[in-house]
Length: 63
Image (cartoon, rainbow, N blue to C red; front, top):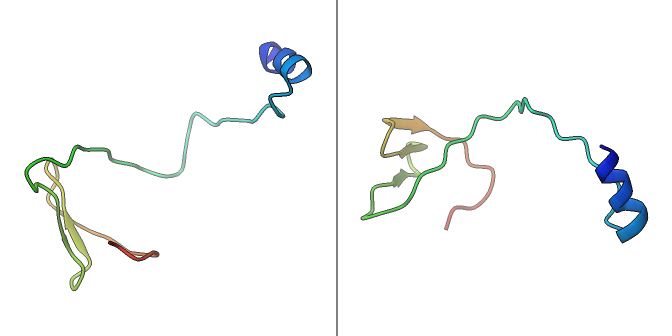
């Protein structure tokens, strides 16, 4: 925290931000290789390599 304040006053880096260790969002990251991820927009599901078909709720357009 002391480091953040020193940078703020010296370098005008911006205000220090609180970063929680415990996020309420669960995330999953994977690599897209050989078409291993498929999306079924009609049924609202996505097939991920290490998981099965997972229900999704789209809030934005999917390209």
